[in-house]
Image 1 (tube, rainbow, N blue to C red):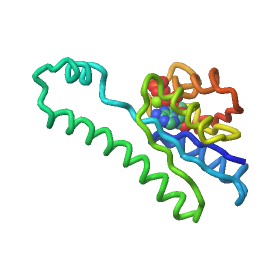
Image 2: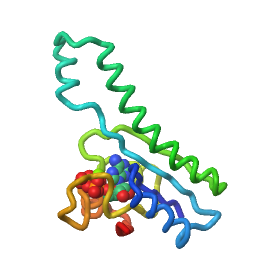
Image 3: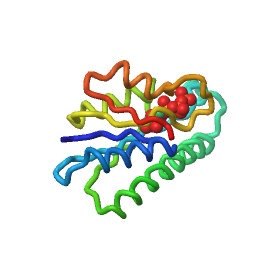
Image 4: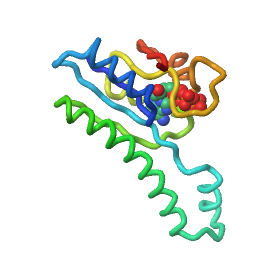
Length: 151
Ligand code: ATP
Ligand code: MG
């Protein structure tokens, strides 16, 4: 089995990975841990592309901040997997459009058999059972999706 576990920095995503490791993982499985990082806002890039007086060190700073955020998530999961002596692959990218779209595209490109993720993430709005990313993946994926509830 090739499983893609989609993670953000939330405890629920970590719960999803824990559930996968406890209930589904076998030593011969391939584990892909994927994260779709938020790209710098479109107005930022638009201004830049239109040649607005936009200091280039400003865009470098914005990119560095985004990369730092992604590295934090990356290090958290890499440390956890290393401690458990797991074989895994990290796929961390900045999404274009919807994060869920990038997750599905990665799972397809990596020829995965299933996507495992949490029901909620870091978002603050809690009016629905599913967050927008888990909702998107559940409704658009052509492969099985397993969603672990928030504790
Ligand atoms: P919203 O983002 O709509 O405010 P939320 O943050 O509570 O809501 P989601 O973002 O849908 O909920 O998160 C649900 C699960 O989706 C997370 O537990 C994680 O497994 C996965 N996930 C969320 N964001 C990403 C991401 N950017 N990259 C990879 N996986 C993600
Ligand atoms: Mg979210």
